Image (cartoon, rainbow, N blue to C red; front, side, top):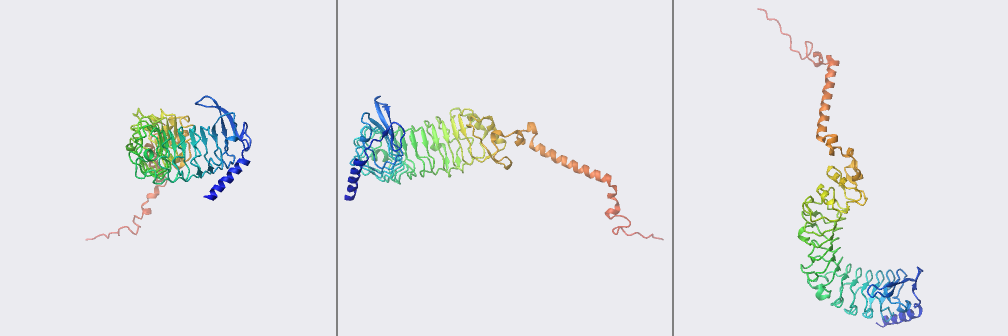
Length: 463
């Protein structure tokens, strides 16, 4: 304890004596912040912003290092080497509305560091080394804080009631070491224990070792529109609020997608990527997603088929017309031609890097030009003679059996070739007999009076 206080006193003296030089510059100078005047969006009054990224700063800068003639409202300190946030070391600016501290080395936050920043609305503490927030009052004075990012740290748990005084709209606590903390057998961990207000609109719970959630886990969050639960251990999609418009379930252990777990009429964007276990899209899986605008399923190598009934009967589906369909880097070999009816209503389709089998069933894609595919070419993986060929550039002669009106039916061609072969063989045999008539001489085949196999001559019987 005494050693820590000694270090703090030393840092305080050193910081005060040697690092209070002005940091602002109106141009891009090395070791200086880029500072400029802006207009406050809320008050419409002049204020200042300072971009102090990648300057190798080891300490949080003091308010004395910024111009005093303008109110500093935005401060970006990302990509530095700050490891401590302590008001006893630095007199931090108190007028900040937006503070970015991502990609530093922060491992200690004093409970009182943010106390005077009462106007703070946006705080990014992601990509640091924070192992704990020891006191639930660390954000208690930030009654205007609506955006908080704590992702990519080393947090094991969070203090009870840590968010209860915050009017949060956006919360990201993903990629931490919470383990079972976020479930703990309770459906009330978010609202009752942590105090996350029910007006939240954006929530990110990525990579928290979650495997299942209580069916009522999100019941209170009826205004939630953006939910990410990537890189967890879910085997089925958990129940989410019907208000959700954006859902990302990528990187989980899903083996199939079905309508049973996708019954959200407000959902506009669904992402389900990076899942080697995903092998099946059930019939009518997306039929209930009436508002769906974008579907992204990529990097699922065991997904070898995209059923023609994923959206219902595609040729008759009128209510579901996603504008964007991304099916890149899966194991798909073919896509049913009924999707041409949906493609006609789409703005963007990505089918790249699938092992497409180029036969008659895939040629319907040629009805659509490069504009739909953003000019990116879809290529054949098989058969071998068409490998790497661009599907949109295949010619009639590349797949002649697909054009019977030009080249005849393949079965007819085989029969005709076979008959011609038989006729040629018979004609050759007849010509051979005409040219070499002696070939059938009885002596050549071992039959005749002189043949050893001829019957013995009969003696005349005389009476």
